[in-house]
Image (cartoon, rainbow, N blue to C red; front, side, top):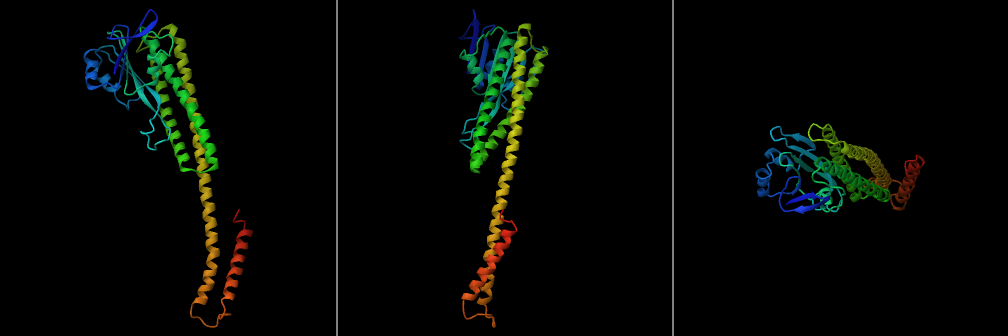
Length: 318
């Protein structure tokens, strides 16, 4: 899907064809649309290939011949429950959003392989003061929106983690433990993406790839602040989650030890009657009270009770 937007007299509206000063939004392009990107927009084929790579990491690339700049940033999203390893478990991931500056054509192009919440917000006019002629400012506005999306998802993870922890305190359910694993994986994805995105923003702020204007400095600082706050939150939540998982692992291991100890004691106590009756079950002569089954029964009960008192006095049950 390819859409075109242009700001005229302060109003950003959809147009039918690419025009100098417009914004071109491309989502999951077909093979024909990929060819159109090269032939009609003049995008470098290597940039097209990189922008359509779902595993591409956040970075900045520059083409000396055409002056085109490719900036890739990682955007957070909620995975579809059908795509996760455990259906019904909420998990977060990141996917790349490519932003191309076409200097000769006077265009800014965004490319994504899936629907992007940040791009959708810009399309629907939920972000104020958009001007497609100000390409640098538009990029920074997108990155600010992406940073805020990270913060929102991190708060969601923290809230769900606290709810899940309360459930785990009552019952050690495998489902709740798997949810914890999903949170841990999500935080790892976020941590890696935030660090690479911050490094990308640092390269952008140098001004060697795109023009930076004085009125954009405050916006650039805001993006840095939001990214660093998201990085710190991700680090804190990861440490808390790891500590909690280690604690629950120790609790589960301790409960297993208690269960095994109890079963071992029961096995020892119950083995005594078996040992006593095994003697009387064999053809052995001169056993006391061999003509009556009452004596071995009483003897087994007495010895078993003495063993039980021994274990109890040794505080093994505690």
